[in-house]
Length: 396
Image (cartoon, rainbow, N blue to C red; front, side, top):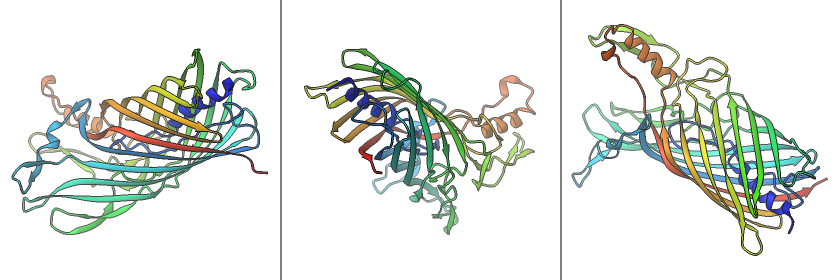
């Protein structure tokens, strides 16, 4: 087997997570789909050839953080007492399932067109405290078509001659095909049930049309070992998608006097998002059709968008993970498993946090008495990513 076989496996690894960023919790980063330029003739998809793929991702977020500090008490307190008399936690739990259908076409040996169609099914489990003082846990759901993405990528060096390393750059558009205002029935503190808009973290889409820039590359290092890196940034210029989180927040001082009202921050944002990944891979065994990889990942959403307005609600933050992976290829078929484990979780201050903090501190003259406002978010420990691809070849 020649070098092109091993490089094609490498690109599967290097590009699987490129469009598959989600910060695994209340930090609402959209599922984007994995695109895999796999070819039996090389690491690029040849002219007029097609490839299809299916990607599945699951995570369960349940650990709450303010900054990088975990609120461990959320696991054991605030949820009332069970039948056994033990106190229960009030942590928010999110269970997320996402499936992406991916189609790629080789416009030329260096240019590839990609389509990603995601479907999501999300559940949020949380604790309700009624006006009578009772507590109970209930679940709400949001599911449906996510935000479809179209992209094109270009290999900087001619793949026919660049067998030791290459760099691909890409440009994409994310459509607002996923709903950002899915509703479900939720019990209320007064004992009634109302159909309300689900939390931002559950919604299939973010309501904005975005533009992404992407890059991926690889380099042969030694023997069967390659290094790789990939990443992207999604620019989402729309300030808010118009869905209301709550009534505007009225900010008061320590004496109960009204300082102001934070208008706009009660609507959900269409946030930017980013992702970066780098690591090593190597083929193993006599047939060399099994590949192992180890990489570092960094993904999340910023507190402020690069372009557009900033007055909207989001839970910004990021996770840093170590990712292990294994892939297997037989002919035109390829299957891969990747499991990133998050060892850093950081819910950074949002624009809403900073606006409220500045308003509260505007009437405090003693520097030692000034407050710091920072919300929390739930994060997962890990996610499970399974990918299958099939080379169709030329269809016409």
